[in-house]
Image (tube, rainbow, N blue to C red; front, side, top):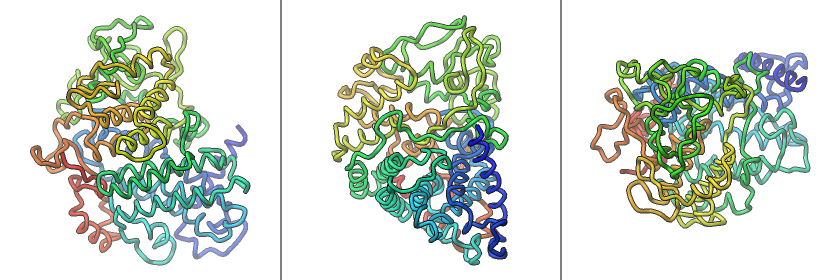
Length: 551
């Protein structure tokens, strides 16, 4: 505990320091007044790892109420994002904080003093900088990248240009390859200041290669040759995530709660949020043909499906008064339609607590008497091992050399996901061989491909969608834009102009990107206008570079 408190003290001190970056050039070099040139780079890394995974304020607004809504992991939270309208104040906050984290990574990377004993920290910073940037560019598309964090905020007086997303992606995969190769386990590592791997250099190599595989697959529909080359090279050494124990996680410790850096979902649950979407209900219902489990703790079922993906009742609770449902709305396992109008969303049958919400498995410690205690002391998963299985399965299904067969990787991903929730081997085996479809027509058995929404690729993406819940809605939203998979119900009442009109070959019933913060039109006007002209308009209907597949 003393170690954690020490790291947090350093972190908060650096947060204050980052708030004064405009004055760096006016400061004299003084050991009692640290600057980016004099502060230990390991402490800068701590700040960017914790900050980049977002405190509760930013996580709720960007991750939960924006990305997870658009991915349809949740529905009907009562904000404009329910109807595909990004909230400008939220996106502005994310934009400004993002470039603060990037600035900190540049301070590590560009300081020549770090090229000796701190060289591993430099390479980790390069990898983490890619992680930060890939999430941002996937929402905005073109954005400041090559000049970000080295312009006006660094005292040069220059405003950063917007790089094309293609150039950003090409540079990110280059950075990951070079950083992974340069990491050296025989040299000093950041140790406890690295909140993700505690300085384990081999795990950072695996993360770099696994992230490169993710980015390579993102290019599959727009630049297939580049996607194939990068994906095959990323897995060639087999230094990618290889088990659940190697999943990329950051601990969101209860001791960080004062500053908002704890595991957030239990708090959202206590606020009555995180209702399952109807799309998620349709994906899970019937899939795999496993009987819905018997009631526990005296909850009497009123309406649950006969069969369900066995993760379904774990991921989402049956409604009960104990978790907020009103009389007459208990004993239900059901989701809410995405994109309801404000009026429809307020109807009693649509409010979150009268529908299935995130399972207690993710947010609480269960007691033997059926009561529970919320648990904010948990890991946040940034990249699960199962995702790497599904990425390799997709690559193999495209004919790429992924080091195994699509079927084997697909089944390994499902198995890994189910093992995390304690599902037994016999149930997993039954599930893997099932031809029982979900509501959309998708089945589990890999070679059973008859019917709607049941290609091998759609099976892979459906399972990836399920397995990434709840921490990786970002990837679910990206896959939906990239492939139109899995099938998601179009938003019921999106605001006019925020979604491509139905009937268009590019219609998906959802938005395609979020718009730039309005402040950019003032503070970085020329570069903003150049980018807007290049991408075809700063609109939620504009497609990012890798979103190239038509219906």
